[in-house]
Image (cartoon, rainbow, N blue to C red; front, side, top):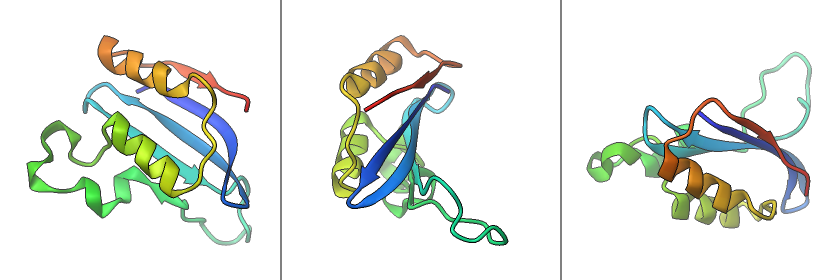
Length: 109
């Protein structure tokens, strides 16, 4: 799986974004979290995680079951008002076409 990690905003909240191409599953993933837990004693749920999105679990989704297509990833980012780094979508598209794995990229916005 590739990982693209960057800091962004979701609306007015500062967030950490982790997205990438999942080579074994042949789909993309997206996780959006607050950068630090609000309470040290409690586990913090992500603001969004494609693995928990009920829209990704339709029986008709084939290899997209539990994950996102690139247009869906862009749609979720738009729904969350995420600012994406320039070049991220193209990098994800290339990784999917080339079936890349095991690459980590840190982005700055």
